[in-house]
Length: 212
Image 1: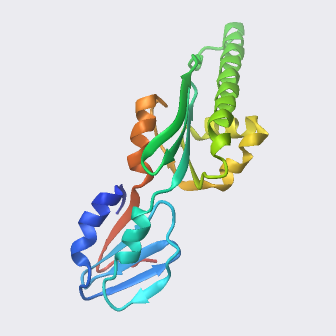
Image 2 (image 1 turned 135 degrees about the vertical axis):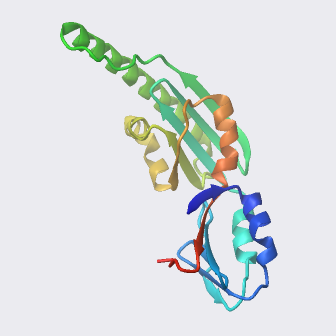
Image 3 (image 1 turned 90 degrees about the horizontal axis):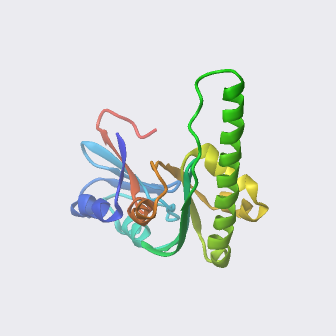
């Protein structure tokens, strides 16, 4: 079973295993820890360049990767609101959050439904354009320093924002694999994201299961 665990909690969970009998493999951006009766796989959020095999439990390369602070941009968008921020380590150093009313979906048919749909599309387009403009304003001064980009909210809304302005095209190339689910892109949600940004994917397998 896989779950995302904060980097400090990963260290607390695994530190006592250091030096024990077993095997540790670093390959493909993950650390695989083979114990006598279990296997633990850890994928740090921003990759793991170290590659080696050890005939014991060696966790220093993993802990070093987890402890490294990065400059990360975050773009959260849903129809109704957006948040753009830049984190140095876990500290939010630049941000802007906004909202716009977007009508919910109309379930009835007829002329009124078409008028409702057009109005909703206009509201959604205005939000996407505003979010894209704000994202450019927040991220551009940090462009040379941003190493990774985290996306969250609604996937289609994020995609529309990225497509709305050519100045945002570079964000996709620096995107992390994890998509962050958020109910509403508010300021406090953006601030709390710092914990999740540094959470590692941890998988624990029993002895009868395989890592492949």
